[in-house]
Image 1: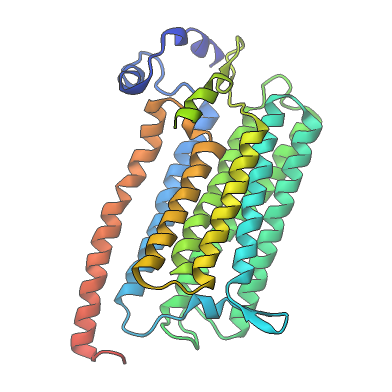
Image 2: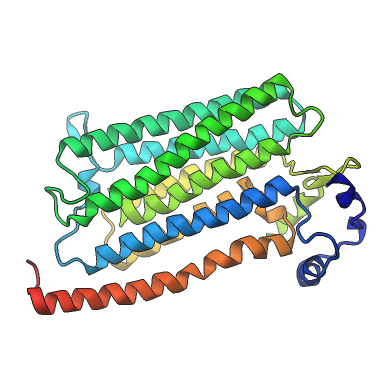
Length: 227
Length: 122
């Protein structure tokens, strides 16, 4: 693979639309990125379609029901400091996920700088934020289940609310959980020095997955919680 | 966009060993991080201060796309990738808007028939 990239004649690569035509009509390879990175992006593209199908399905049942939809602002409010604060836990979860994205971005940088200790430390911090996100989600689920929310009905309004909520946040939570495990494995291998010869692209690839999880949450936050 | 192409001189360094790396100043990441925090705060404020109607939707969608754009462009390094790659990844999801549009029409039609046959508000 490294040979291909060296002999690809990248010195004369043109930019813009000419570059697009050049790349797509190239003899050997179209994408001048490491294979793992291209494959991760294609996986994320397919994942985009899965999440979009969930969100589109949610939109369809929400606009087509004649029963009033539960008000997320009230359903997800927490009673803190003697008053109901709307969506507070969801807001904290959002900030935690963004923070974890920030630490992950920096881990990629330290990886390419071959600073193994800082890279692994930043990845552990990222995983810790991710785990706390999943913990808060478990708390949210427990609270809603205790209040009687089920996939087939709930006391607040349209029965589709439960199925959409459990499906979308559950699938996202599964992604976060998988991401935490993935990050921990890569972080351990970074610390052990497994990538000293191969290079640290793997940190960037793991980072892509993690940022994607954050990206999906942006859309869930907007469409499920703020609508 | 111009500031992004400027910093591409430092990024996307291709070394002799055939490694392609995305290295950008930490300061840039911290700025984007801060910006995402502020935008998330704005999104939350939309709900907290009970903005309603079209204004609510415009604000939600604007902040959502701003955040998504920053994450994809900077954190996921899309701003420094080659155009052929950007098109291959970002163009297919654009077609999802067709699905969303069709399902919105379908949903509206279902509501109307439900109101006709079940009576509204039941």
